[in-house]
Length: 81
Image (cartoon, rainbow, N blue to C red; front, side, top):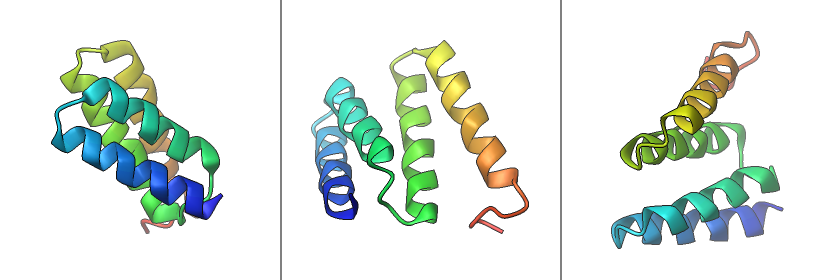
């Protein structure tokens, strides 16, 4: 899962550089679903997905993603603490 998630994360980053945001979201969503990234990277990728969703004016999706991200980063056992 880690290797697949990292490759998907890289592909998502490349798609962002090429301004292919729809493709980037696909790759980054798949990276998150692999659940193989270290916790901090998982959260960073989730935040990036929320940012791209805002850019794409997918506001309902962005709200869900970022609310989930906030809940996970605010949890007492969050790796961001």
